[in-house]
Length: 249
Image (cartoon, rainbow, N blue to C red; front, side, top):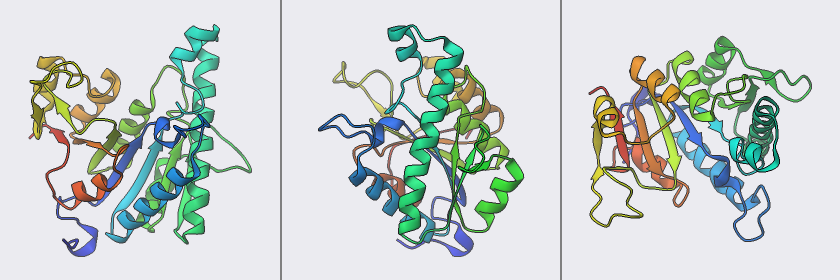
C-alpha cells in the first residue's frame, strides 16, 4: 500500500507520537541497557515511517536503565530523586536513537524537558512543532520535566501540545483485551474501543493522567505489539488491522 498525498497515510494520520518503553532497547541476552541491533532496527523503522510523509515525535521510557518506582522501593531512593534519574535515562535512550538516525542520514532533533546545555535542545512546543514541520524526527526526552509523572503522561502531554493525530503506544501485547490474555485463554481482543468503555471495564491502558489527557483532547491511542515486531507500526499507519484503537469515536 502507498501513502496518500501530502503525508496523509491511509489511516488518516499525519503527525504521530510514538511511545516506547525503555525495555524495548534492552539486550535480553546479556542484560545490558542498550542493544545496538535493536537501536538499528528501530532507526530503520523510523526512517521508513518518515518516508511515508509522517511527522514523527518519539517519547522513550527509561526503564532499561532505571525503573523509577520499583527501584525507589528496592533501594530506598527518594521518589523525587528517583524520578529525575528516570528522566535522565530517557535522555540517554533518545541520544542513542538520534545518533543512529544521523548515521542513516535522517534529520533528527533531541528536545529535553530538562535543560541539558551542550547536550540537546531544551523543549519548547513551538520549536518542536517547527522541527516536525521541517521534516525532522523529534525525540522528546526528559519526561514532562517534573517528578511524579510517567512517560505515558509525557507522551499524552506532548501529543496535546504538538497537535498530534494519534499516540501509538508500542507494547508487548497485540492490543487491548477484556481481561489479561496471559491468564485467561478466553480473553477477547478489541479492534476498537471507546475511552468511556475502557473506563467502565477498568482496563489498564495508560496511567490515569495520560488517559484523561488523551480523552479530553480527543487524541486516539493505538496500542500495537511493536516490541516483538517493529513493523506493526508501519502496518498500522497504512490502515492494516493491527492492534487496538481507543478513541471517542
